[in-house]
Length: 546
Image 1 (tube, rainbow, N blue to C red):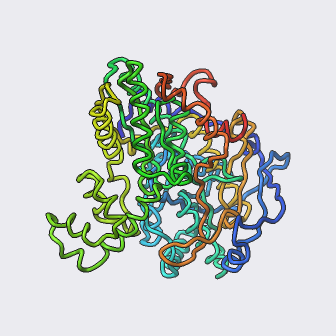
Image 2 (cartoon, rainbow, N blue to C red; image 1 turned 90 degrees about the horizontal axis):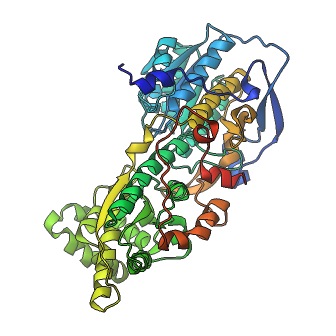
């Protein structure tokens, strides 16, 4: 593999570990735990992995001897910066415990376990991928581990390779699957441990035990750099409104963090839209009013940040999409010619939803009827919400102009930042955090744990003061309706409107809207003073009151 000068320099970076994971390590157990909701149901579904204690790794004077063991590792779901460092931390700790230990990587996600596709991860492979972005070392996939035949098929290769434990690196769904797999192997007394690691750039896998999911820091810094560049351009050219859509289907954490870093004129937070029961017209009117106020001061430019999942948080749009989903699932829908689809849909929708559908620009209306994802959901990343909003704002401003209520200029540019952030070279924070997660995962296995997620806390402090350990996955679960039936799942973390990050944004957004308060964060820095290179997200600092 050819390497850039930065990659060569970066591969020599040694991630910083918490004191509890350096040298000799012992385990400290806390009190028994219970799930965040539906305790009786979760306990009944997970009798072998429920109620286990929180654990913490602390420095020890005593040198332990470790029995040889093999571990399997899986990358699951979308990419997130730092995944390779989880694998590196796991590998280094395994070899430190016992040089005979082996690490096997299952290829292209959980499907690699089911279909017995794997490689042995060697020191030579590891050294190619230290501190790099991406999941290309072993690939990732979205196969869900849910069925008994999958668990049994996986067991065959686990036995063949004499694997003691499987480590699954993924988001809330993947770690829910890890918990189900851990319970199954424990119930059958197969002696196979399962450990999870918290990954997702969306930032929606966090709670009292998980401060942040890995990749969120790097992705937000990557997006913030480009937003800052656009804002500097806008402030130089002084003629465009930039509508910028950002990753985040289920939660607006990325948009909020980028707003805190860059101070745009407008940032829409999906959770607030839902809470206030806002209509599409409410959002459009709000944006148009800011545009008009800035135009009155001679500023015909600005930036608008929009979370990817916004459409599904607008209550009226959510109702429309639900009716469209039912409508498009019928056999009659399949026979309608493309040219006639819009008229056919208009004739079938309820009067309320037909009015909303008719108000949409034709291109967006068409995107709402595109092929559904495997779960039957609208593919929101394909809906050009940024164009929808700018077109509707332009239309409203034109109406105001005719009525003499607007005499500025409005020209829009559109951007969607998604894949650009998922595989960026990890920041020092993510490089350190992920390496510590991998090291923690190896310690959880060595200490006989299963059904746990590796965690690292106190990460607003210098790395040596971080606290590493594990949390029972059942502690984070509740029952939710999925595809018409109640299922145990890890509770998603949405933006909380009463928490410090959102409240800080609210306290400043009026000023940011009218004035040009842009901040230009610049690129991620890897070498230099700690106050430039090792900082966590603003969201995390505010949440931890730091």
